[in-house]
Image 1 (cartoon, helix red, strand yellow):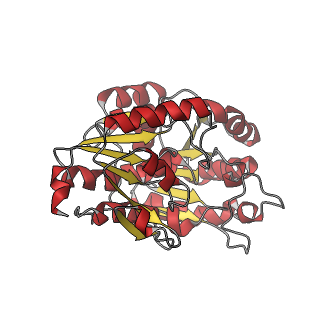
Image 2: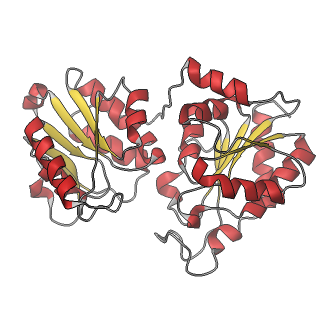
Image 3: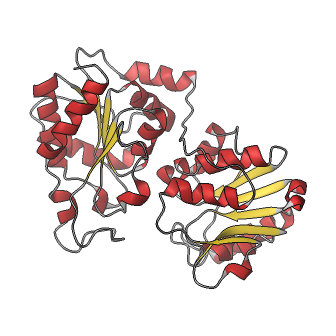
Length: 348
């Protein structure tokens, strides 16, 4: 692998959502340390431009992924994809890394980039199609899967610590939105892109009212503009009045708010990974996703709530039956974990 020292241009393909990219930060950090003089480009979804700006210490350049046959994250427009492929091939990457799943379809994207060397995971007997390849480790937490790719390239990749850097403008935004509190501040994030990952709004509301009654908590409801109706439903089901910040924050502002909380309770979605990265005590409610892949590594500070059912994990966007994996997680089942975590923070 000595010729890897000559690498100057690296492309990393990971066209996924916020939580997926946060889980890739340790691998990006390892790549930067292993290739300190190389330019690292992230090929990702349009929103990830801001991610690259925030993580400029590890990633130098962003290229928007336009879609590709077999990749579900974006609609395929043939002309747009052809233009992307032509531009990327002309950029002459020295190394292209597939960090987008098992490689069954995504390795085709890597080959289309025309890099001198390629790296990634594979399924079946596809190892010969990549310069550096390993079987897809289906039994590992996501952060370790990503670190394994950096290790495949000779990088030291033994630190799974997540990060989410904040700056002064993030904290200024949070300070302007957060009112004073006499009790613990507890954030509740009731949204998630797939409906199957959403704990019922009425359950969140019941839990929030109990938190106010038992701990005099200040409840902070968070959510994106796409999640306004979900958050409004939680608020309408509550007896008490929360602080509703849904749709009012930038991503950095949301993260700074999470950083100021005593506890963050969320569905299995991006902001839960932000809480993990910032060290804010959290409880993540798991339903159809594989908790062994996505749960925080530190489950003393970051707890999970789930109810085992035979049909989970699954990949459905909408549950075709009765959503039993989440409906059987009761608000009462979470209260003990709340008490433990608040006591750890000495805010009760």
